[in-house]
Length: 183
Image (cartoon, rainbow, N blue to C red; front, side):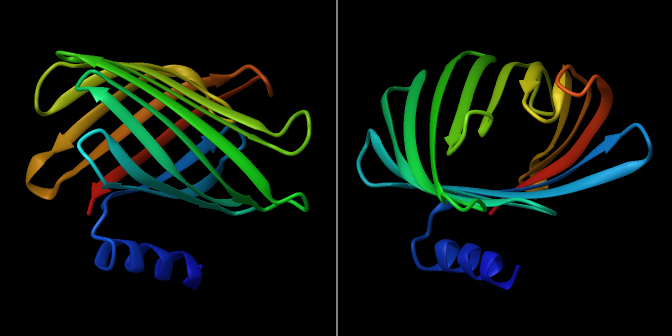
């Protein structure tokens, strides 16, 4: 965990990357909450190209990715990254697509590691009703499918969100809730 926080601090102060920290928990039937901490950062190297990084720490899983994103227009961005995961094979790849126009956006994220079942996805179709509230539909592996309500706190450059979900892979209801902070 100390290495994780050192990584975040180095990226914020040395590379001056725009970063976001996300802390959330998955509450499942049976009363267990699984905590998760994510950090995503981006550093522009030209008008259309950025370097990106992503780290994730959970109770039984961790990964770190570094990559690049390309934004040829203000309504589209594509990214690709590679890194390591908590797995004997170590290697992990990821890709992203973002489309946005007006108050509507679509984000597609995918990752693949070694092994046939070692993949992950998160797809979010979102509509921003105001500067304070957005509503989305999300499909998120290991979390479920469901609506997401997000409340923005502009003065703190943060947001809080909640997602009641149904995870079809394990046939369980889940409640995912968290907060995001831009740093």
